[in-house]
Image (cartoon, rainbow, N blue to C red; front, side, top):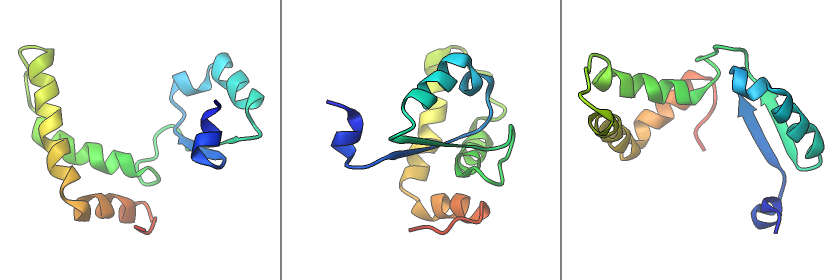
Length: 104
């Protein structure tokens, strides 16, 4: 079953211009699925347009100077602030508002 049937409508994907997003394979996939997939590409670095940049900024405040001993410690160090943010919708709303978007 095609995923769009499960969702009941078209999919809109908003991407920055990271190199991976611009590969020939991705362009072919997007073109082949244009009837249900719409892609909006942001400039290469546009934190003012991308709410997730605000979320990562909050995470980096807690993790910025960490010298992790291993991947496990790094993973825990990133998961902890993400979990705090998850239970603080006002922080997520602030990230949305910073882009000019309105929280629903």
